[in-house]
Image 1 (cartoon, one colour):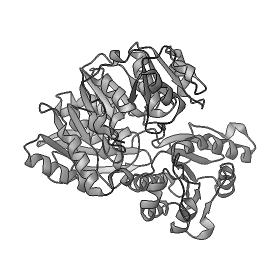
Image 2 (spheres, helix red, strand yellow):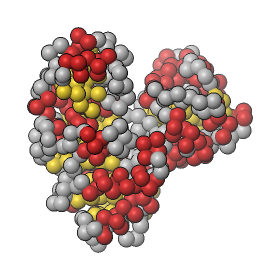
Image 3 (cartoon, one colour):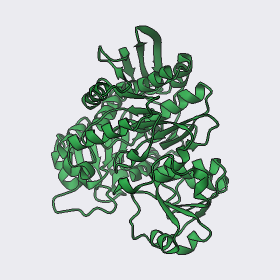
Image 4 (tube, one colour):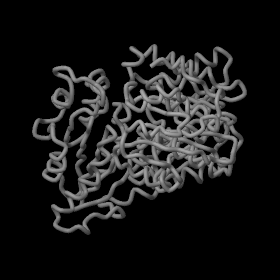
Length: 493
């Protein structure tokens, strides 16, 4: 993808797009963009083959949703928006160009929506969605009513996008296809930089150079926030500071501008002490567990501090942070088994999530149902992914989800399962989707924790697992999202 030919932020406004049609509107990224346009009062339509839960909300806001891909869907449309998952020969893409309609990548349409706002762009190899959600909630609690588009839905809020009245626009910036290079942030937050998307970048050095290019697009009057504990983030900070740019860091490192200390993580949440510029900000608490969650939250605290917003607003927002759907999302309990859903698919984020879930499991076992996301990542990072999966007590592995990719001999989950350092009787590759719940119900016992993890389709497995476990117990009432055999994870400890 040649993003150099994309229309950068500040060139168009959302209103310039006229009547907007989004191909594949049900996906998380596209549905968030559609919701943003709808709440902004713009006419929106979309085509989607699957009945995603987000579609009902879009229809309620006035969106027109077509359940088939057809050329007639473009009647009356001015701008067609597509994502990187849509092939260039898609019939609606071909028809849009034949009609001479404006055709924009999702990032270009999002960039148009940012025009006239102070953009807070959150980038990084992993942790983007959670961090973007935290920054959004902190700004909301401070009363500045930001617009936002997040690659996930904030739990209990049920939305990943909103058109706000304030001057700030918080957005998750995707590095996977270089599209984040068309944004023009006022504030850039970079959570970490690790090897990923090597099909796009080739090697880590080229990826790091792209993040540096992204950071240099930050408004001179704004600032850059990155993690002092992350080697890639530290190298970036040193490079940019040498260029005279305004960079602020967070982390446990002694030289971090916002320093975390006394981090305590348990099944009930995470808490730590924060200090910036020699000033104590007190104790920050989150009701979601994981040291990595604490680190992500520190970037939101530092951003709020540098914007001159009340630290109390950050403390209150994070203390009530409900989490993000598919990011350590608790699905419920059935037959004494606690089920979570987690989006992690990069080995570092997988490791952090599984280590935290190990804490949650306590004396129980951790059973992982994993569907790898993308063949190139599974191939290039097989050893690291296998090591992360080795944290589990039991593993049920599905085939790689890689739409549009061609699997070569020896590639895929059959090879990955062999590399996972677990005894043969504690890991299994299932080629059929329906076999996964069968394996889980055979292996799980009361007190265990089961997590569905990885590619987007695996999120649908959680409800199936709860149903299967409930059926095993012979009591539909056995499913109880409010009961945790190991203690509630909804209250900070």
